[in-house]
Amino acid sequence: MEPKTPLGHLVREVWPLLFLIVMLLVIVGGIQMLGDRNINVSLTEALIRLSVVVGLYIFVGNSGLISFGHIGFMMIGAYATAWQTMDPMTKDIFIPGLPEYMLANSHHWIPATISAGFLAAAIAFVSGLALMRLSGIAASIGTFALFMSFYSFYLQWSTWTAGQSSLVGIPVTTTPWIALWFAIAAMIGAFLYSRSKFGLALRASREDEVAAKAAGVNVTMERVISFTISAFFVGMAGGLYGHFLGLLTVDTFYLPLTFVTLSMLVVGGMQSLSGAVIGTIVLSFVIEFLRKAEKGIQMGDTTIGLPASSAEVGLGVVLLLILIFRPSGLTRNAEIYWPWKHKVVMTAVTRRQS
View 1 (cartoon, rainbow, N blue to C red):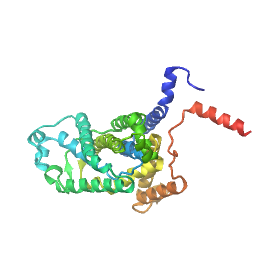
View 2 (view 1 turned 90 degrees about the vertical axis):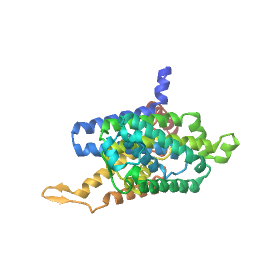
View 3 (view 1 turned 90 degrees about the horizontal axis):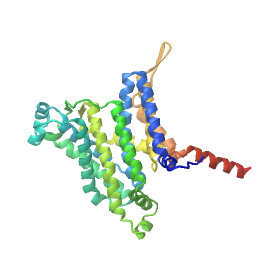
View 4 (view 1 turned 135 degrees about the horizontal axis):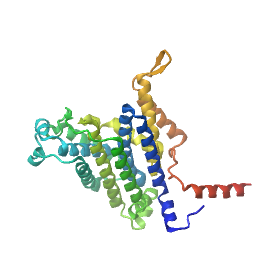
């Protein structure tokens, strides 16, 4: 069943994005109907992570380079949003080193979150001009070095970040629906980028860098563009995260969060938007189940609980199994197919085989 009208062709083209958005709306709406506060907290955290994973996909999926530095951009976005939205009296106590204007004024969390994304993108652009000249493992190590530089700098920059202490007093505004709309915005951005000339050029360099350069692709600049766009969405996710927690510590944005988000992308399939979304959903359910199992599951008169840190162990086991039995992820690096076309193709294949 092929679409015959221009509108039909448009629906077919954006089908992967539409399918993922509808799926998320159904999941969030269904969980909201349960009315469980603890589940809503976990749902909000999962949706924020989804924005981060989609941001990772924009760079990692299209370039083929693994980045260990994106949680640094999330940290930049989180603190930049906090600087703009905290109460002036609280800022004067905890972060007195801010410029006078920022100390004396507070802004709404929406423009603060967007501007934090632009700050993360600007830093990504400047750092990317140097890092994106590298390829392969050298580029990945470079992003890790960049992340460690951010982490150490924010840990020592106590007059702006409270250093090793917690930065408290951040308004709690992030709800599941707000996190969902930002995640959808990130998905739309990733979808449009992947189908733009910039996304196509970067994927060409992913498949064969030498051939892409010979065809006139400026590989370094294409990587910088992707790195910058991905940092923008990850930075906004950081702003949402700060307004979800209500407080910030530099240690929140360290290796555990880095590996969890990368694992979600790998499990789903690094080279597709569908993989980023499905990997996040699957691992979020796994993590939530294991967390509850650690606290104990009531079985009649008996409470059965898993040892501490079982969530981390379970995450590692799932990732290991995926890497062994399905290296290209749950989606095999493919998008969700247009269903009617897929049925037609499968029917034709079946007839030829018979």
